[in-house]
Length: 187
Image (tube, rainbow, N blue to C red; front, side, top):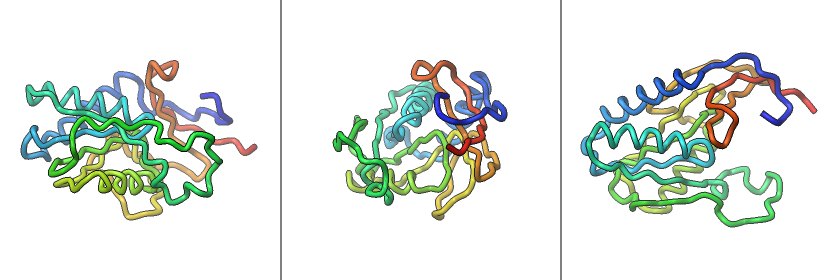
């Protein structure tokens, strides 16, 4: 973690994260009627490798390939125009291996906080077509919702203070695979 924060404690190590992902995939499998109707989408950026892991587990469980893609909903965020100016205004990460039309879309993110990113992602999905359903899976639900959005599946629920955040690290993009509760230092 390169930014101004202090680790408070580790919430999940590699093995605990893998077990949480196993439970999440099992819960997703129980809520879908047919594996042929599933499309797993990871939200940029750490939701993408988590979605790939869940899709892989679902593929093994159903003995069929479950399509997995990625979604960058940056331009759908309600605070987009108030955020730091981007020099490149193209969507950065979007891969859609199948149409969302009539599918049960399993939307995966690393941390659920205010609900604004999830709302933006759902809006982006709906611009691509009309899915049969959208199911929302998060590795960590940390509370503090600003919108009435809740996960269908959460790997871990943790209560945080206003000056705390949850950081998900996933190799190879990060030096380790783990989840930490951190205290954000004011600059």
